[in-house]
Length: 171
Image 1: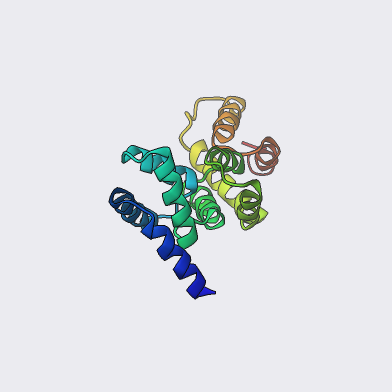
Image 2 (image 1 turned 90 degrees about the vertical axis):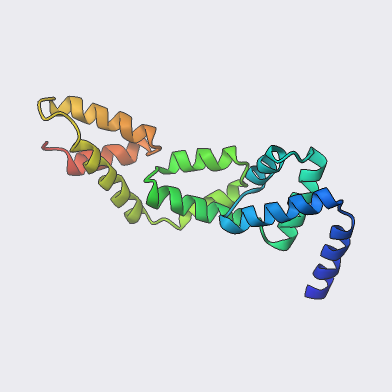
């Protein structure tokens, strides 16, 4: 089977122009540095001067070689944005949809984050932001600001309200 894939790849590469081979090598390096999705690679190829036809051919080659894997991308992106950037699920889903990642891969990636971990991230973000508010403001005003901030970060309203009721009820 691996031999057939290699033969297919060799045939595909033989049908590429020198310019396309150069763009393919550049795209391989781009994909090797960080997980990429088809949409971002197509955009980068167009930035580099590739035509739509060339970018389609190169992306197909990169998928066949395993440089692009939408499932792997969705998992890496979700993990990074939730754990490092502290985004909420809604913002992650919106961004992945804008990158045209298939919904089943988005769902799989989000399921890898436990509810407990997610609530912990939400609480950490809320406590950090709460500490920045003016101590002279009323608690109601701080809570309203916090709700707006957390919603802008992509957290769901029921999750925000539950966290506020549990951890900021008496503040």
